[in-house]
Image (cartoon, rainbow, N blue to C red):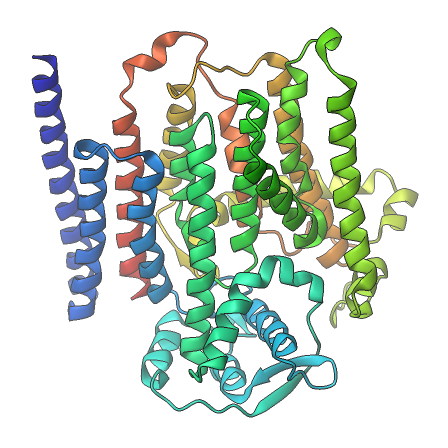
Length: 518
């Protein structure tokens, strides 16, 4: 009898959500008409495809009751393709720079690089500079998409162009590898630049989905929370881009997932250990290693062990692993032939023609002025917190497409519900573990801000240059997962409805992006 009542309730909820989806679609259609535009066939097709994602996602959650990692794939694959079409190459933050780096690495791999300079094919060069990708203020997503649709069938011009830019560091292959492989594949088979760049995206997309699928499958707790974070609009956008944020986010999620698996279940499969070390190694290289604290999540396993039961062998394994990873990092850096990349980090250089400043902040400056660093960080958080909040949750494209900011608070509320009412496991973090995770999160935030101070901020500035909210996406999972219930109250909340809430939010955000970007 209870099952029949539950099934009837699920059917009622399904009908309700379908009505809501139709109403949302109708509202956006009316807005387009009110703006004086006709509803094009492509708009109807994409809008219908998003609603189909919602429908089949509901079917997977409520009726088929698929495993959560299987449901994630069913939702994420079509959405990533959808995002990739709406935001073509060049329309993701800093993707112009990443495209040049990927092209340079591909040229090195093919042995066609010219005089140790970043080398592109003529088609790739024209594609970047015809669309003003180096000037974000002039980028227009509709014009870029129109350009690509008009030139997608053009013949490829394989002539090589060497930019006035040093070739990309070979160590960056760690986090650009999927995109480099995709672009190289397109070049070898004679596709033009547009199709080759999409191959770079699709290869990266495949790697991102594979890593996130496995991370979601292996994480022992907070699966629903993790599921929701993976469906955030900015996470999906970066997951289909050529940016190294794709590998940064995926490896961060994998490191947290496997670190928790080691700490909570004490289950150490050889495959998991190897993947954890690879993920940690990637985090050591991307953005000068400022995200390495995330891998320390595995240490919470030691915190829960009484001192009299803590084996010296466990401590030695941990120390040895840390030293090994640092040794690999230093060895690869020393063998890197691109010394200018190293000099950019070590020595202060003239940033740009600034009337206010001539030099960059350095570590030596902050040693001489110890109070200056905390002042800049606290002042930056005070001034730019709202900007970081928006760019982490709802600012899309080259920071020129703003989705609903009201939904940001809904996302956060559902994250808190998903974490607090987690019935996947009986495990609860103790107070010491929560303090340790909180310190990791704070330390990671400080590392990101300090890293951007040293790399981008001119001397004399009172706030930090170059920081965006997406840089804090890797810490969202550790940040929210410390919320849990001490009672069995979580059994009163059906996890299906939490998944449905995330799915509905994702569909609404996708329709919002369709309205703003098409």
